[in-house]
Image (cartoon, rainbow, N blue to C red):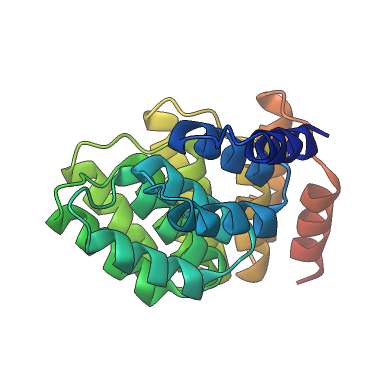
Length: 244
């Protein structure tokens, strides 16, 4: 595998006393992380100070990525705090990764704190950071916060993506806010964002949870009109709407 080859190259360089520098270590950590071997990536990063190598911002971001892959949100909080104490400090990638990790772990309070810290440190909150935080709100059933973040994106002139809208839609669906789900779908169309199968699945599910079976069937018909193929989730949601 690629990650195994990267690890062997680093070991070979060390054995021949041609100790790889920071850039080589960064490349190795990234390759190993992409191979889902996050424990080995973290081990390589920890070895750097012992070898007289100062981890760079790229190194630390790679470590955050490995921690995210391992769902180690506490490690992310600790690593980001350490980065904030350094002269270079974290960048937008650092904060976005940290927000995403906390979101996946349903620690949305920490995710919100990171967004605030991001702005305070001059790392302008971007679409990726907002997407990660809206997803965190969706998992935490905080639909009002999700919509508030969508409004914040508008004020910052950050164009929402399909991912943004789908996450906000899902938050509304879980809260049985079918009217807001339709409003978001209309906004997607106004922004010329192409709704996906998952978009309609969420809207149909929102209709079903609110006993709006006729609207659910209308959306199923709309999918055919725009040439989107329904999947098992689509039909399950539509059938569930009819049962209610």
